[in-house]
Image 1: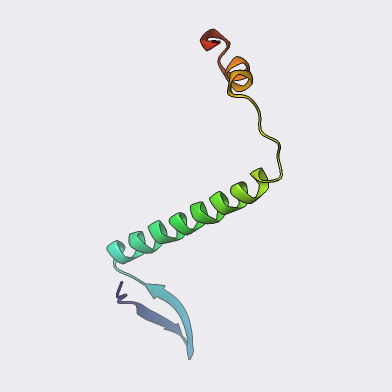
Image 2 (image 1 turned 180 degrees about the vertical axis):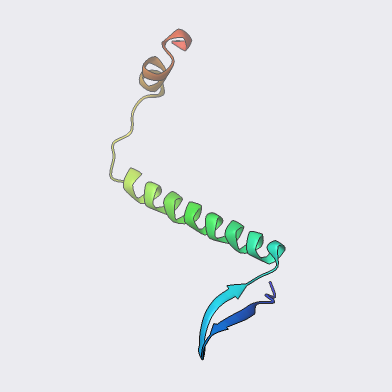
Length: 68
């Protein structure tokens, strides 16, 4: 993705960046996707340390009306 930033200075110092809305939205989407990936990898790593449970037990706990 090519960005087209506009830099706004305050004195001699760069103070703000302005992006076209489409570029900003694309960056936000990429950041959210990255955060989701990090969360997924963390959950996957944590779940490796947990012991599994039988599906029937999970169904009975979450939806007793669906008990087999």
